[in-house]
Length: 272
Image: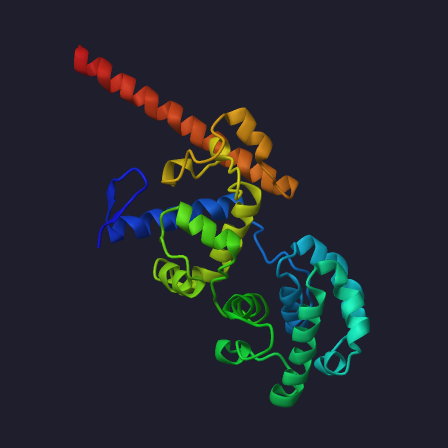
């Protein structure tokens, strides 16, 4: 089935798959260290951290969890926790009463139904308090090595900007994007899209003029196009990320110069 790019041009299913996978390869170059940015040591710590990350930055969650994880080391600890103490520890993450309810319920359910262990199956995880498909896929992909797509706000925004889907419902988005890539790519694709959304393709002011994906993105131009201003919007999280971004952009600039030179050479031959 043919789909339409933002400029109105038709794109076949085969072309869409090729473009999507090319974008993923570029993202892999840009973010060689892409990973879950929540700090955790085991599945229980991860599932609690993901619950806390709702409407909160990973940075803030990582500031809270050291004390939390030192106090509560098992599902049994969470199941028997004093609500007031738990709420005070997680208060900085926001919505702390609702999150405390989820975490207390999570501890009890894990003890009652799963022997105090976090299950490694999607169908089990989504039955736990505070756990939807997004949280379940984060846990499966990063704690159990089971491929999954994490459809958060960054993921959804980017796949729509890339023209991979027009769907809004997270579950439908998950299935639509899953069909474009091998299952083995799902977890790392999620990390790379989230990294790019946080560092380059921002919600309100994407750095289009400095984005290495510009030639492959039908939404190029919705953000800042001036290269200098766009570069100021970039938010690489490490020196290695900054170097990778600079290297890819340098290579692309050199390729443009080479293509232009080849075109001039062909034109000169045609006029001779």
